[in-house]
Image 1 (cartoon, one colour):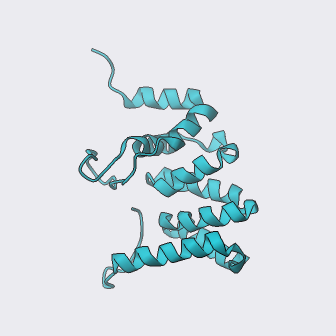
Image 2 (tube, rainbow, N blue to C red):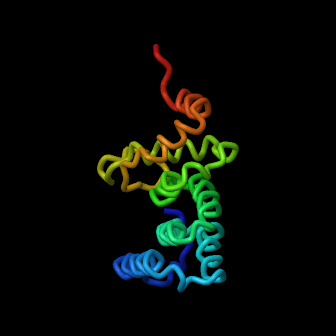
Amino acid sequence: MFSIRDPTVDVDADATVAARRRLTTVAGRAADRFDESIIGELFDAVESVGLVELLEPLRHLASRRPELAERLVATALAALRRVPSLEAGRCLTDHPDLVDTAAVDDAVIWAVVVLAGSKTRGDHRFSGPTPVVHANDPGPLRVLADLCPDKLVARLGGMLPRPR
């Protein structure tokens, strides 16, 4: 995952996951506790720092506060341009009518293809700096297939080997 952290600080992965779960629970059950400045900080952490994990509580907030959905989808598309993120893909699946087809580019298509095909760390065979994605979620790919099939076919054609 794309994130920036201080290498001198030890991070407790379990505590981080637990904190994100608590934040997501509060977002889903008590969305009114999040004022505009807190919501802005959450979006900024995704957009500027790359903490795509925060899309999960933002998704829950947007389910209770529909006025956030448009920004959520735009933020998810930007995140997908950087990294195949399960949570970013779920944002597209949750709000397919808000996906701007003009904002769907090759990087977004590549990311949703990766999400559709990835399963587990052992099944992931990509080499290079691509992060391992724990997913097998074809939902975002289906959204793009419905919205912009021509772009999707063109990009997939470029990704697949030519017949001999």
